[in-house]
Length: 273
Picture 1 (cartoon, rainbow, N blue to C red):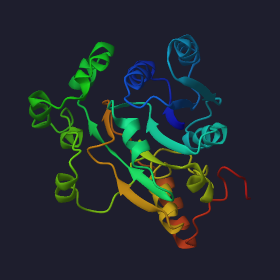
Picture 2 (cartoon, one colour):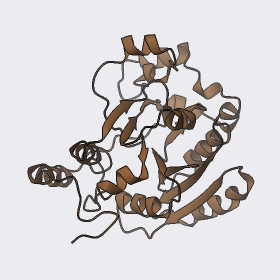
Picture 3 (cartoon, helix red, strand yellow):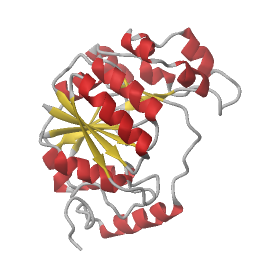
């Protein structure tokens, strides 16, 4: 058993697509934690009505909307999980049908598995449907994805389309995949005790950016964790939305964290302040 933790906020359509994609996963032994950063009653109703019809267990972890508190709700989900392995995705990312299997099959002690994502344009995001996910049509990179990525307007085209090709051959992967694996906050996994070692997500980050991935990666490396790439194996399809800017406040706080050279955050799973 492993736990998939999905961070959400008021995007019912995307969550419906994610839950559909989870229903066609090749690996079945998982539970789902919906880490809800204060969505409205419509989301709560959708989850309560949908959960009984799925073959996997869903836990809805919720707190009141008091602004951006993603790291806090993620920590609450981690503490509620009873499994020893955790996968993190965002509530606007649709997993390939092999997504959970690849995270599970490649897991190693004291290691972080790092996947990537295809950024779909608004056009391709709007075309995605429950039916296309149930048939697994959604996970096939085709000429339309490539043509879409060639649009002149960079704000209306798909990007990182090459991340959607499923490449299992070890020889090809060894030749193709270069560079140090990096955490993308919407697609990584690790053993629960590895996350507990750094005391989870730092809840002092109260705006988007850095706290959900850059900070986590920095502290995990300080703690001696190994990093392994799952590019072109654990694939996600990211639905279009306007670009979110990283917070300047977060950036300044992260600089202080690096100066301290300490992997254990004080305001995380446990309160050490």
